[in-house]
Length: 248
Length: 280
Image (tube, rainbow over all chains, first blue to last red; front, side):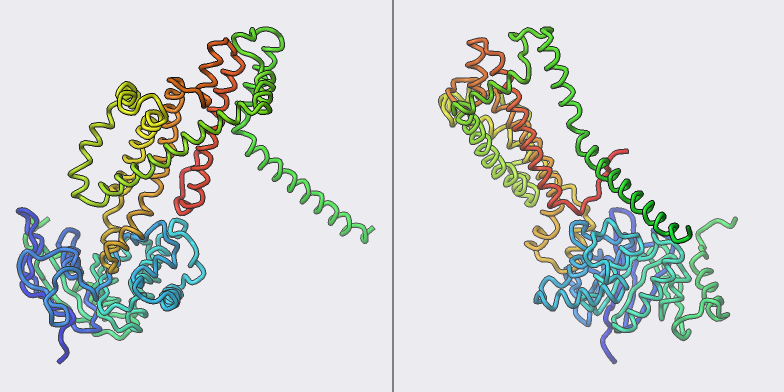
């Protein structure tokens, strides 16, 4: 059996008195796509930051490819809700950001390739400020994919986009993830998005897992299929179910 | 008749296109003219008032007269000499002030140790008006060039220091995180993220530095000098040559405008990525 790409054991994170993550276990196989859903503030983005190595857990351990993670995770690329492009670099140079250590010719070729993969080849020489929100997010995706990461971490990547653009982006993310074969962690509050993209859906509430679903629907997924709707409703139930909340 | 229609239509079309072209040219000419309207209007009113005798020559000579005095002084070589001395002082002061101000601003902006050691002291010194240092500068450097240069450098230093430091410190922390995730080294972070982020702010500092340095230049050129536009003005005052005084002031204004335009040119060249609010 192959080693897990990511293995979290008993990971906790505390900021002062508030416990954000409380003993989280997570095993992620290579090529697997996991979606973490939950209400805002449940700790899902914090877990993603820990896996990226941007923060350190207060307790527990995170192994990447069988080795404990210290410092930044060199195999991971993150895509944030805001595209976080460097405004003073043209689109193509933003995409090439992760390839600075590659030879110039290779850097140009791979950046151009990644940019055309997200359908923005003709905008290579533009400034990010003239792009639309959806286009910026596509550049951000191209930037994350340009260095062919083994682990792609998406932190509510489509949260700020309109519904139609979001559907296009989901199709794009799915096809790029399939062609790349990297492991994917998608943090989202959109249950439809989770069912569309993930092999497995984990529900988080107050820093703990409260439910887990495996998604065995054929890809690309048909949102109108009864199985899709059924699963979506079950996940939605799990997200909304809150034993601590007073009955209305 | 029917043969004529297309010809006529083409004729109309081309004349419409020509008049559109004219409108565009006129519009862009008008656009470039607008900033000069106010100074031109002032000059015209000033000239007319002087010609009609409303303004005595001792109070304010006519612009045409100032211009002719300027021409005489240029031909005699007097004016170019003073102009060159003032320009050289300004250039030296700006060069030294930029190296010190931007250099220290970068150091305190980038490195926490430098910030802890230097920033609060520099902020303390900043509140001292630089012209209050004149007596001290004279005691330290005498009344020669060094004293003048010192005071002008002081004027240029603080705006450059503050805008460089703030430019680096006000960067979006998310962008630094992105740089980390994408494996940029410390040097690459500085080169690809921090310096470009600070540049617009630094250029604002350069414009402010020109302003303050210029002000100090005017003041130091009135103390113990025998060259420079300030000397020209001061000397003219002794002989009540209002025309030369006005000429000197106009030259200061023109040099200041030239400096500002140069920085703007630089801004347009290097900060093209920034989309700015252009006013309503």
